[in-house]
Image (cartoon, rainbow, N blue to C red; front, side):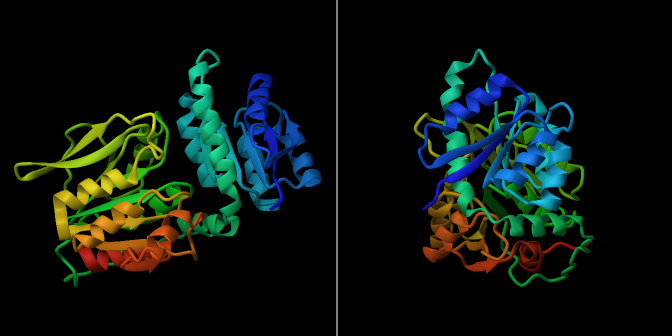
Length: 350
């Protein structure tokens, strides 16, 4: 297989050197060029035709947003945003413009975080080979379309009390499609584990809450799973569900250094299956890796309902593919049909 060809776009000499050093650790990655602003990045994109671009958002001459708009219109290419923790709102704007994923820059003084960033960057760059830009573009177009909520008076499968969703690369757009399509009367609680670092899930939840008819928030210790409410696991932690009397509450857990996926979809789904048994539904959306497979198997074994996003729309088919191959997907659906299926099965009427 040919090497992954990367263009680095960043106005900070320190960041450019750091990213170059990280990428050079993998012999399967070639750095084809380095740009300090969006104008130069346009020229080098057309000259070198990279497989992937790492992009800083704040640059002189032409900023990252302007370059991203040009890129998605003229030469759609996978982009990984390189951002600081304080820039979460800008990150989600970039994802909505077509960026595939993001990583966070550690402070210059935090040398201990350098290895974590390197591991994250290399993992995402290597996973990009499976990313489909055409599907990402179609999902973003779907977000721009006006959708009418489906009304079902008598759902045919009405014993579902809660829904556990897992996603990774491409997940923010997929989750947005689902959560903005459900009615305010949706009669089940929703819990989500989206692979995301610390400091970003609060902005993500707030952004979704502003455009959805559901109540969406970053989960806190002791939050109750309730009808019409969505709890998103805080980035950098795990979320589990536990029963306290008649209530089901979220428990936030510190990860171990050995944990492969943070937040863990498997941990959330295992705990949800234990609490809800056959009244839980599990959904695995786009993402690289195998997180969610064991959790979906557990949900299915306990009689719960399971859905995997189909290859037709999954930006990265790794996570749903594993679930489907293991026979753990009760239904395999494109992203546009998942909210329709949820309303049909669970209910909800405007």
